[in-house]
Amino acid sequence: MAGNDFFGADVERRLTHFEDCRSAIDQLFFEAFITQGLRAFDEFLEFAVRFSNLSVYNAMLVRVQRPGAGAVATSHKWAEFGRTLKPDATPILILRPFGPISFVFEQEDTEGRPMPGEEHNPLLAKGQLSQKMYDQTKLAAEKYGIEIEETDVYGTLLAGTAAGLKISPESFNLIEIDVKSKERGVRGFRIRLNAKHDLPTRFATLAHELGHIYCGHVGGESSGRWPERSHLSYEQRELEAEAVSWLVCQRNGIETRSREYLSNLTKKADASGISMYAIFEAANRVESRTKPVERK
Figure 1 (tube, helix red, strand yellow):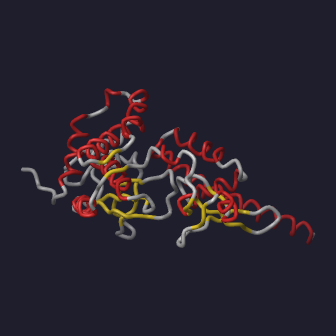
Figure 2 (cartoon, one colour):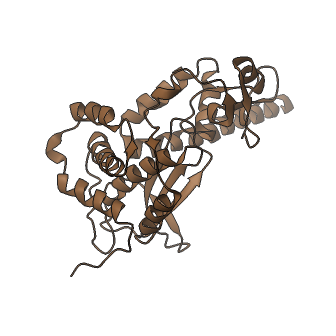
Figure 3 (cartoon, one colour):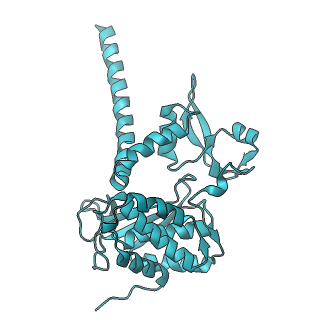
């Protein structure tokens, strides 16, 4: 009888472990699905394929800890490749066969020998940009109720994210809402930028994420400055936001690979839902760098 109790407890422990893991991974997928639709399914599978040197489970552990990770390896493997860890490198925990854990590091946490294809990263931008202009653009956005954070958690292939916020009735704190929310006016917005990217790239990313917000992709502004337009498809939302970023960057001397990205999006997006007015209005807000003026 005691043996059966032990067996039952072991089964219960394993089922609890499975449920905990399922809940964490599926929630991560659900959050991606909200903004990307079924494309998120392909992205999750492609992520696991990209890290074929790891087990599928470890690849997902990397995905949880470092969204947008490019390449990962141990410090020893990076040294063999000719790259060393940066002083502030953040380890990623994975499971080790026949052992407890091991640590790997993402390429942004290393320096040295150039990575193959590094110059073709579509997220990177180049050009001369003053810190003052970048700070003024952030300050103007914050006056629209937009929180802007720079995080070192994102990997090489994730430049930034944007989300709408609302007031939690339980805690009276701002909480993140999904892009499909039917609320007409959210109470604030949050942008997170990859702190490891250089200034021109962060500026281009900031313009892109502000484009999402000002075009209404993550909710309408509570005082009516822009409407809620989250009904657009993923491709339509990306096309509008990237067009905003391209306009702003071109007019400020920043070179990006937006034209190539836009060309690919126009082949997939339904042009009937695209608003040129929303794009121009959003670009104008990004460029204004001034306190928003109430319209009468």
